Image (cartoon, rainbow, N blue to C red; front, top):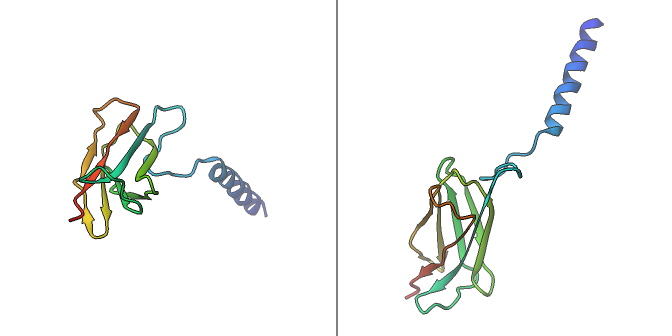
Length: 121
């Protein structure tokens, strides 16, 4: 009986720790750290926005990928990126792909803007 009480106490303590622990997030640092914001537009060669293009952001350390479907104005946004990690970003639209760009950990800007151009011809 005493053993069951000890095990129940340990399980209760463990469950309290799990509830209090923050959920893991893609490329995110705790709020006290300085995070970065990546924004930009997906454009054709004539600088016209490409609505419904898909932007892919890859964490170079974990290889985890996030996607963003751009709206009518072609804009995309990836907030809360860790400054100590490199990210690769590219876009696709109707079977065409932009060049892959890198957000470097050595670039110390808090907000990085990268426009991605796709040759749709």
